[in-house]
Image (cartoon, rainbow, N blue to C red; front, top):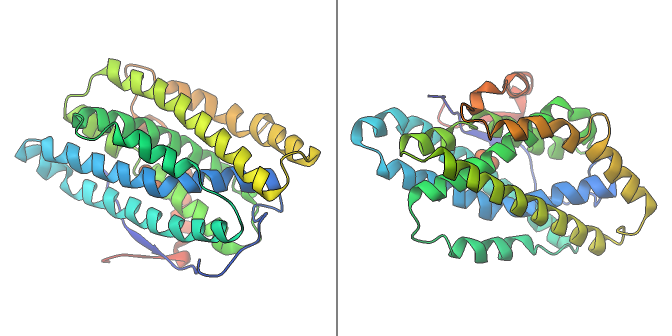
Length: 272
Ligand SMILES: [Fe+2]
Ligand SMILES: [Fe+2]
């Protein structure tokens, strides 16, 4: 069981930030803005799924998972709250969140489903967030925001995603989720996640007026497929999830631990 600390971030997101907050780069800002737009609805779903899975456990297993589930819920609830503030700024900048209503429609279909399915979906999404988070922490210089509030927001979120990457996975196993369904959900979530990310990034660039700029496309090519590119470096960890003997702890969490230790002045642990 991992010990999950809930941290309050010492940043003020009520104040506006620049449109191209990510290193002055339109593409990177649009991509991260897209991801942020999916967080409040997605993270609420993860919280609900983990709670539903927890309720299915026999009492002795509930005792084992109780503290970890509380930590998970506390961390995701804090992420939701801060990204809602971040997203409110994006709305003021004229961006339009189409991802959230689409996700809400899809999640309606899942109402009343067996908790194992909810956890299968959550574990797959958490794998995505964990490998993305790990990539961000390893390449923090590529985030390159001159606005310290924003680099803190994204790296803190990344550190906690990496920290709690096993919770939904372990619960899925504990409630008897099968390998076959784990892989089925992973394939579906991969398609949905990639299509939604692409659609919302393009949408953001269109509203920003930078979709057809050459610099946007060259930045996309190097950021995704360059030597330290996001897709290039996360492909293998993405694939690992399909192995029968995979467990999220097989991926090293050192960058997360290091960030939390080096930047402990940016947050206060809640309840400590
Ligand atoms: Fe999160
Ligand atoms: Fe998470």
